[in-house]
Structure formats: structure tokens, C-alpha cells
Image (cartoon, rainbow, N blue to C red; front, side):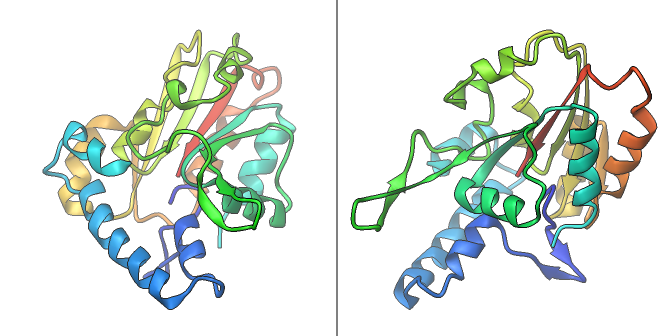
Length: 230
């Protein structure tokens, strides 16, 4: 809900989880159970009256994306995508859009299939909205490779995304851009306090791309790293 839209023309767009839910190979019984689980846990996730500590136990068509991905790649800027979604689906969409460049590193929930081809769970520890930090990276040495890069542009759509830059060594400046998509009136104050820029129900990457075009100048590209939440 940052790189991908939360809604388009007033209609909610599917997340990577929804894409799986709506698959034709998922049974109707399974789909109903997945829907019930979503309504239960999503309400907890976005509840502005609960603290992160209270929420933790419950957490066990792109627009402008080509400009965004290609600009980072051309300027040798790492793009780190930290997602609580389903990594297999996320990677497939990026490949289909033909923007899976070598500068991209993804940490997400990857499906684990048994030898008969049935989904039996997810690999490693579950990544959810409120544990997005270096401790969840199987290969946290990736962050060590970023030494010398002092600036981070962090994009997130939840309060949990604010911790994504933890573990990146030598960071001097972080510009935090928050995408506020749901319960806007209730959450505006919290987002304004936490993020440097808050975009309300923004279905584009226009602001982010505009910032990149303004910031990137000759000789000024190689000290940045991009972190993206979903």
C-alpha cells in the first residue's frame, strides 16, 4: 500500500495476500476463512486506540513505479523492500512489470510447499507490520554492505514501518514519507508526528519521484539507500 495502490478511483486494490485469497485454486471454504481472519486482524492492526505492544500478539496497478524503480537503478541506489506481504507474489509482480533490477533486495514472507506441492506454512519467522527491523533479516549482513551511504528515504504506510532503517550503519539523515490510506481522520495526528511527509489517500508515486528528481544531481547519487515498506 506504498508502492502498490491502496485504492484506485475509490475502489480498494488487492494486496499480495488478497491476490492469493482470490486465486481460482483456493476453495470457497478456505476463501471464507481467509476473509474472516482478515476482518478480525486488520481491524486490530489499524486500531489507533491500541499500542504496538498490545497489537504485537495478534500479528503472529501501480502508477509511477517505472520511473521510481528505474531512477534508483540508474543512479546505483539500493532499493530494500521490507514487506509483511507474500514475497513470492511480490517478486512475481515486479518481474512481470520488468523492473526487477539488481539493486533490489527483498525481505518478506515466502511460502513453503511440501513435496506434494501443498502450502504447509511460511519459511522462517513471520514478518508482520510491527517487527520490520534488522533483527528479522535472515541476512542482516546486507545492511553492512550499505556502509558509507548516509542518507535514507523511507516509505511506509504504517507506524510499524518507521523501524525499517534500524540496523543500517552510519545513517545521518532519514526522510520519512508516510502513506496514510485508511482511517485518515483518526490517524492523521499520529502520522504527522511520526513521518516528515504524510500523503493522504495518494494513489501515485508523484511526490516521491519529484523528490528523487530534485535530490539527484551529478556526483550526489551514491550516498543514498531506499527502504520501502508494504
